[in-house]
Structures are given as C-alpha cells and as structure tokens.
Length: 429
Image 1 (cartoon, rainbow, N blue to C red):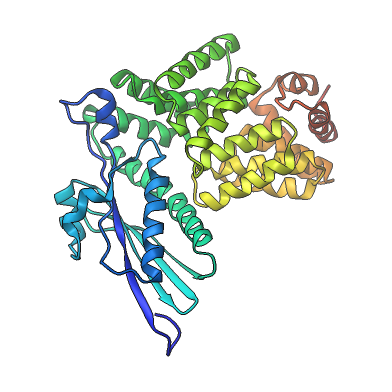
Image 2: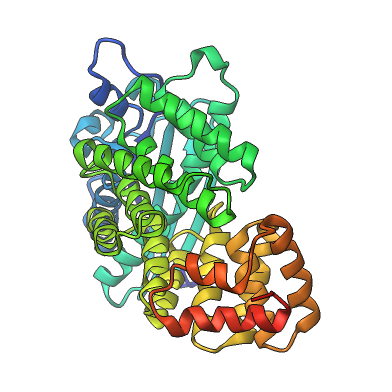
C-alpha cells in the first residue's frame, strides 16, 4: 500500500462494537438504558512495530472518546480477548458478543507515511454504514492520534444516530421503549414545523414517562422550547420558562454526566429563561464531559454570539463542522456563522451563511432574520424585502420595537445592527 520499494506494515485496529436493543426487564431502568449500546475492542495481533503502537493509541483514544457519549456504553478490550490472533466473521462477532455495530480498521505504514482506514458495519446484516481513509505524514504520533480520534468519533456518532433512528421508525408503536421514543423524537425535532415539533414533544415526554431516569429526553425536550420561542409560537412565556426549569432540574439530578442533555439544557436556560451564566456553565460542563460533542460546541458558539464574542463563535462553529460535517442540524451552525459575521460587519459572508441555512430549513425564523438583515446591510434590497415578507407572514406582529424586546444579544450594538437591517428592508417601527 505504500510507495513502491518501501516496506509496509499492516496492523489491524481492534474492533469496537456496539449494539442497540430493548432494555432487559430484570435490570433497573437506569442500567437497562445504559445497555442499549455496547462497545468493546478486539485485541490486535501481537505486533509492536511503530504502526502497532499507533494502532494501540488510536484504539484507546477512540474507546475513551466514545465512552463520553452517554448513549454509548463502552466495554473494555479485555472483554473480547477470546478473539486474539483470530479474524472472525463480523456477523459471528455480533452474535457472540451481542452487539449491533462494529467499528474496525487498519494502520498501514510506509517509511514516514501512514494510512489509516476505518469502517462502521452493521453486524446483523454486514452492511457498511460508513467508511473513510486518512493519509498523513508520521511526524507527531500524538497529534495524529488526536486527529484520527476526532474525525472517526465525529463521523460515526451521527451515523449511529441515523441508523438507530431508521431502525426505530420501522418498529411498531406498541413495541417502542424509552430509547426508541427518544430516537423518534430526535428525528422529528430536526424538522421545524409546528406539527413535527409537537410530535417530537409527545415522543420525548413518553420516553420520560417510560424511564424517568433517562436524562437525554429531558434535555432535548428543553430544546424544543427554544424552537417555540425562535419561531414565535409561544403562547405563555412564563409557563414555558417554568417547564424548562423543571426539566433542567431533572437533568442536573439524573444526568450530571450526560453531555448531550447538559448542552441542550444549558442553551435552553440561556435562550428561554435568560439565565445566561447558569446556562453557559452547563454547556461548559457538557464539553468538559465530552469534548467531541458537536452539538455542545454549536450551543457554546451560539452563547458566544449572545455574549458578543463573535470571533470566538466563528472558531467554535468551524470546530463543529470538522467534528460533524454531515450533521442533520448543520443549518443551526450556519445561522450562528451568519449571526457572528453580521455582528462583525461582514455582511456578504453573513448573507451567504444565512442563505445556506435557509436552503436547508426554509421556514427557520433565525435564518430569516439573519438573511433579511445581512442582505439589507449588504445592499441586496430585493432579497431582503422578499425574506422580510416571509418573516412577517410567520409573525404578523413583528416590528422593530418588538424585535428589540425579544432579541437575545446582550450587546446593544448587536441588537441595533439587526434593527437597522430590518429598517432598511422596510420593517415598521
């Protein structure tokens, strides 16, 4: 595989395995939920070349990184030492260890170059869900391990979610467990319409009812209230704020190590309840628990824009794109980019990002607001007025004054920059 005339070595990366199945009745609710996913690593062949050391390090780093996702329960490599010096069929491994997904790969080394391949396989049918290859210079082994870990974990986490959502959709309603309800709710939450958001809420509250100690649905449920507020669907703001705080109290009580729940809850407290410091602290806690959580970095970036730290927000969103380039909620990150560039006076860049977001979610109100203001300030008045018309149809009561009252930016100059764009586009006082 390497350059002709140079020796190469091929070191298998120990396989990391997962499963997703209904909870075992005899377990407690919490331990049963944790068993929904399992991963273990098969030991590598007894070879200790430079590639072997690298393979060891990559496997250990990936296992550690995956263990930080609350929905993924990680098994130590020692659990599968029976496969040492063997190359078993993936389906056989899945049956014997009771896992659904297998992550496997290899490290090939040629002089100062290294090629790392990895693939995610469904152990039940042998289908390939994801595969990738990385060719790098072998200069700093630790930097290379970090790079591979970030790329692999960032890629397979959303792929596993998508695979599990697809599986949950094919189950009958009567057989849904708490995790299935959460997955279906997650899928509905990606679509910004009243009907899909209401169905997402119904499924998430059903998951909570089935398993009160499952913290992730509490967190996602709080996020639905941010969509309601952003879209102008709130009927009773005091009631929404009270419910977000109630859900948040459950997350902190039963999910102090659930990075995804903490991240969603933190942003909801910032946006819905305007508890800026408390919410930001929860997001930081989430990222301390899982530094590879793309959703956490996206939420942190949005909070950075709220605080007026726009250059930092751009860096954080760029990290989101590296972690999860195929994320179904990429439109949110594109809107954050639009916000940050607009507040920095980079109107052309802001309008480009807002246009991308609207192409993915045409009725997402924050994207409309960013696009209207950015286009107007950039001098694209036809585009600005057209999107403003959509905004006003979504919220007929919208005025410059009402926007000032609801804007979440903490710096007056950021709020006024949006207002000036709306004024130029024709929004009344």
